[in-house]
Image (cartoon, rainbow, N blue to C red; front, side, top):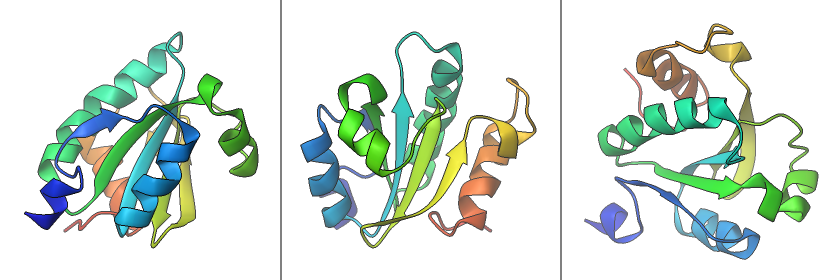
Length: 126
């Protein structure tokens, strides 16, 4: 219940960079998708993250428009869209950059992404 009250269990967009800092402070594990509206692959990532957010309530799943967050993108050295920032205890520990770690294909499975997030320890993966 505490997780749900903090926005876990759903995949949602945050409006600004300032919100990012507040959100990662509240939760131990956060996956944040840096996206651009015009990038087709971001829609593919959205589809998988929507499924995983419902399945892995222990982790907060967010998305942030990279074009509206230049400071954060520079600070986290995000150059490729989509990029997932994997945050543990308020610190960015790992990144999933593009689809390279996911088989370098647009039709990777949700399980492949789930496995990759599990490798980073940002979700409870068995």
